[in-house]
Length: 416
Ligand SMILES: Cc1ncc(COP(=O)(O)O)c(C=O)c1O
Image (cartoon, rainbow, N blue to C red; front, side, top):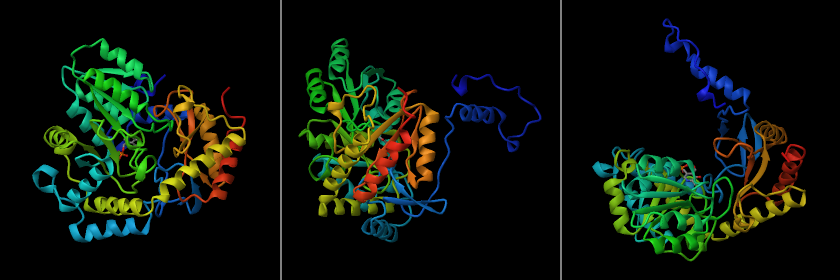
């Protein structure tokens, strides 16, 4: 039973908040009993292929800093220089007085990378998705969202007030059927480009065709595609040759670009609409200059060293080959193996049960490998997994050895 549905303990009128929260404590205990309690792990120092946790150096196999840019000297310097030149914070929301030259500069660079006429920054990818879905959905319209879309899209759709249709994962025919059933209704289709927990790529060409046929808008979230796929690391839309065919592309700065924050890249009409209607943009302080400085430096590194993306993709293929060679089944329930990009840095190893997954994580931690188990509600019950992620800077021999260690850790624990 979900802990939220468990009966609440009786309320003691003498109880003070300073004494704790018995209801939440009981629920937290319930989560622990179900093997679903989550807690924060503290990393000491910059992230990279290796990280320090509790005084131990670990091989990092679960971050999203795919290109190794978060700790890159140029990116750190970019952040520091931006803070020195522009201050610690923007001091205001973008529309009031918080738009700084460095935001503009970064937006131009992102629009150029994505091949759109404009781009607009958001404080986080979560906020960008809330903003773009809320602003582009029509109140009397429908939003169609892939069943495995990120939580921020799910919440954006809920908040939008439009009719919500969750279509079968990666199934443009389902989208087509749902749109045909609603002729003349304004429609928005939203999909991850690369799915965050599964690593497969959305059928973008088919989705573009369906949307075009029905006059629907299409938004693609490239959080895990930018830097990892496509020419110049431009993402999944560019990889599919679909630049200019998608109404809005969402990207994050906190993953392959080694910074923090996010953006929407689109035609200037769309961006101007977002400036006027996207609530997480309008009612939130503009991004700190250091995050923009870091992202600008990361874009410079990406442009100067295109080999990083190629190296990342080669490491991802190496991880897949090694795991398979050690007998690990990389199939993910509900995912078409043909949609999995072998160069995608997200390599899920499905274990099944929460306890077994966390036992594998603990065993790997003992062996010097940080590979966090992923449990519901992030993934469906029964599909708990080790979401292994590869970085361009992983040493090949170390990565190979770590994958063999992962294979050993899941052996005997995978649900049949
Ligand atoms: C597909 C996807 N979209 C959006 C986000 C949110 O981005 P951010 O971390 O910048 O809030 C994430 C992950 O965090 C993600 O995986």
